[in-house]
Amino acid sequence: MLILGLDAALARASVALLRDDAVVAERTAVGGRGQAAALAPMVAAVLAEAGVIAPDLDAIAVTIGPGSFTGLRAALSLAHGLALATGRPLVGVTVAEALAETLVPDDRTVWCAIDSRRGRIFLDTGDAARPVRLDALPPAVGKVAVTGDAAVAVAARLAARDDDVLLTDARLPHAAAVARVGAQRLAGMRPPLAAQPLYIDPPEARLPAGGLRPAPVLPGG
Image (cartoon, rainbow, N blue to C red):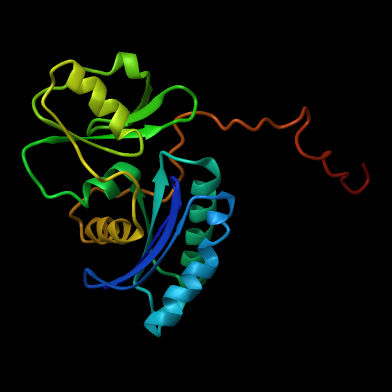
């Protein structure tokens, strides 16, 4: 299977092309406001390096969140456009799934902690992401491994409570892991997940009263 993975959920944008679980080509852009805009050129560069064109793809996988509104919208829009143009299946992958995919399986429960930039974190303890304060973390049942860009803060809090916690180095998702999770989803190894944004908080931007522009004037109106 030739699957393209895209990610711009957090402070890194990445694109990776996998053929039967092997990385054929990849590109990464770290930080900065232009990382979302860099996605399309990165896709073009990855496909060119691999010597393939978009219709050659078997599928596309993209992170759906939680994360940056701008990054998520950019990656999802591009992924949907590619899927529409090629007629190939498109699957969603959560940030927690992509980060956990990079870990060596063991008996620890994986927690994914994402900085919401609003004084809270988005915490996924294995079921669904929800907003929590650092001083109100849920109890850790058994051994816990923490991933995500807020992993250091969460692990420190858990350690202070004498919980059995492992701080992992899985902080930012990578498109190669996104593609691998997407391939597993398409193979029926994971439940289906639509490529729709996983927003935990409403966007900070607010529309002006009446929307962005006046309603259109209809003929005869």
